Length: 112
Image (cartoon, rainbow, N blue to C red; front, side, top):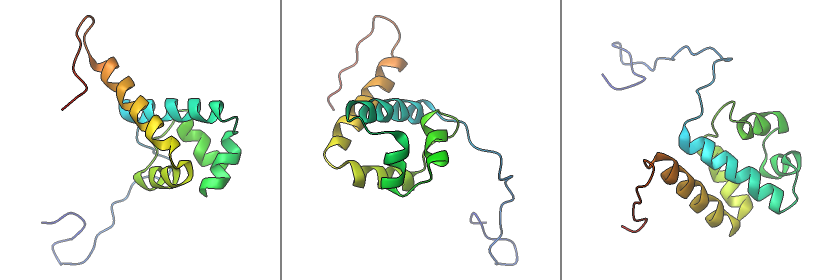
């Protein structure tokens, strides 16, 4: 049975408590850390950037603190707002994640 479709063929709604947020994973934490650093380098407050992106400051700050992950829709808005700076943020977040996942002393090539 496809996700979201009941036996009767109608859409079903998954009941998830509104207060329950998924935990931020390693990539989400690396992304948030690099986004915080990029905002600091540009001397832009989280509140200013949140409003520029179209998110509430409370929602945005919760994700910057790693209390919840950014959604892909959030990331799309952030990319559109950051422009060329996005490449640096994404690359650094990925490199941070890869370095953290490597056992001590091992090095993995970044090229594919």
